[in-house]
Amino acid sequence: MAKQAMNFLLALWLGAASAAALAQARELPDFTRLVEEQGAAVVNISTTQAVRRAALPQVPGMEDDEVLEFFRRFVPRQPPGQPAPNRPESRSLGSGFVISADGYILTNAHVVDGADEINVKFTDKRELKAKVIGADRRSDIALIKVEASGLPAVRFGDPSKLKVGEWVLAIGSPFGFENTVTAGIVSAKGRSLPQENFVPFIQTDVAINPGNSGGPLFNMRGEVVGINSQIYSRTGGFMGLSFAIPADVAIDVQRQLKEKGRVARGRIGVVIQEVTRDLATSFGLDRARGALVNAVEKGSPADRGGVEATDIILTFDGKAVESSSDLPRIVGGTRPGSAVSLEVWRKGARKTLGVTVGELQEDRVASADRPRPAKPAELAAPNRLGIVLAELSAEQKKDLHVSSGLVVTDVRPDARAADVRKGDVLLTLVYKGQHTELKSVDQFSRILAGLDKNAVFTLQVRRGESIAFVTISGLTDKG
Image (cartoon, rainbow, N blue to C red; front, side, top):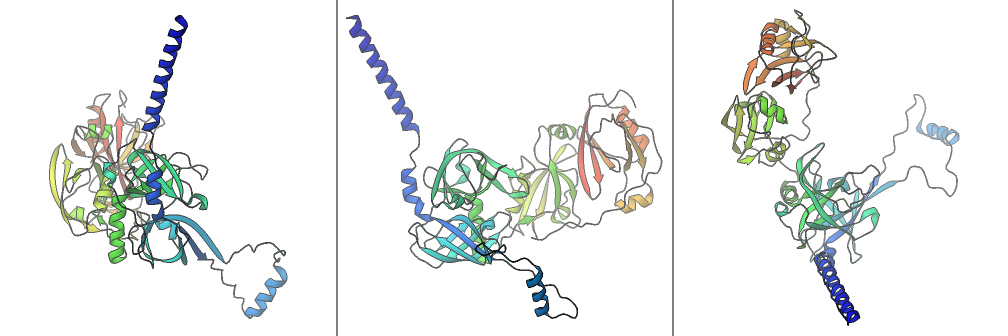
């Protein structure tokens, strides 16, 4: 009886374990139907670019034939059977996907950049030539077209509804292996990358490698929620950090490319920086948020709308600016000519301003001309920050286009202001939301003398053509 009871209990335990394993297996996603339904809309893109050979040097008094004869005699020839070092054309591989039955295809701009010929290969082995309708480097999106009809096309989803941890799937051609399927989860949303100010990237751990660029990122409903664009890698291969352009950004860009061949983006003409906790404390803001305005371009939409340096932009056109990286995306996505309102934090209070958005120029380059460095006037002893300051002369103020300020002539090794450099010009001091223009060395020393040892305050600093805000946490007991 005891043996039968043990066998019965063992059977029960094995049955429970099997049921648990089966339940766990049922929780894992099945991608097969999604791939069967959407795979045909994904294409392989190869491009050809002719290699432009440099022109032969022109030698005075010598004809081209003589130059060629010189190179034939003295430049080593390629051994037989080996490929020429300069191939007549270069090739690149990428991915894309059909967005309409009449042949419009989305891919990355860098996939087709500089291409003389674009070939699109479908899953049914058809190969068609494509032409570029438009490409936008800022968002890395290109719209191309093949002459065909009745093509299978994807459908788009709403990337704002994506949740971190949600399953997603990519189809593309990594290293030229066509229609390769990889899956993973959404790792983060709204990622900002260096030099990429206009795209809130979707970060995933989907295996993306060279050749996947331009391919679609699907949710489990078979909707495209992004375009695979970049990877973070120290080896050139997959390392678990992949970035996709959200579908709503891609839809807006492709619509503009289709209508007018270019993308119009808004601009207001401000230089901004992130608001840290210490900066928020200095400015009397309840928490670290918004975009701190370092400088306002003269005559820009922001200047005409009354935006000032030291303003913290909290909202733009009704959209919250939680981080400084939010502002370029929001402004860039606003149609030029639109009249919008923005809310700023100015000297401890909220203020609403109106701005008419301008248009961002593609080749806008900042001037390389810099003002002459300020020369120290009247030297002073080190203060509680451990820096030595001098007052600006009338000529220096004119050169720097400032009405007042103090130039840093020396920074001691033990200075509390680690981010302040020799040659910087201190313009204002911000403490508990109050802004004080710095006009004299004595005034600045008196302000520091009245602050608590653990005080947190911010200095507005002019450095070359740039303006930044440097936060100071704590002072020495005495200068």
